[in-house]
Length: 276
Image 1 (cartoon, rainbow, N blue to C red):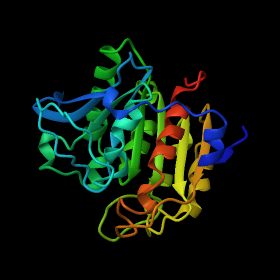
Image 2: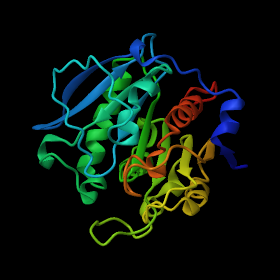
Image 3: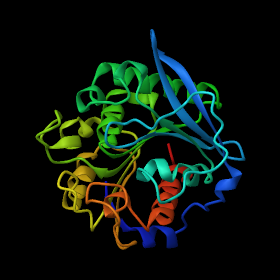
């Protein structure tokens, strides 16, 4: 199949999903038993209208977002703080997508190692949350969306969970090894992407200077998804001047200054009429 390669501005001009205001989104902190004796908590951002799809977000780093179950989140997280996916989760929800931002499970001491991200236990947690989102929302499709280290979780989930999940988005994908982390030396490229059949979108910023997420590798990630029913490569340019290190959120690595456009492009890909 032909692989699309799009600039974010081109995708929006082609008819991206409309983004509503964040105030139309309600949010709460939830927990569930994802394995016997293990609790997984998550922020659940709920759009005003019945959702057309759900997304599980995987943050980077140690994968911890500090969820306190039972907490109502009255105000959205300001743009200027935190991981790209975490700080924009309400924007994604405002496009009609139910958004679950997953935290590290209770047996991981507040953070996920890269080994845990690739483990059977992590896959069980993801599968359990996907099943809950489907069961409680009329069987809507559930997408896995990861950024940076979170792409290890999302890619592994897409490769191993089969039809229990329905779509994949990888942003700032890990494709190079790191001496402090135990994952394949080619990152997500070593996680069985060639077996993924669900729709997939690969997003990268041309200015990303993080040593383990070089944008030059993004086409290789997209090509590895050759069996995907629908796939695209989205290359982003421009944005605001960086306010953090190259591998942190307030830089091209985190689409700083391009959040609105990138989230709209992801929402458009998820909600296309042929989204399954």
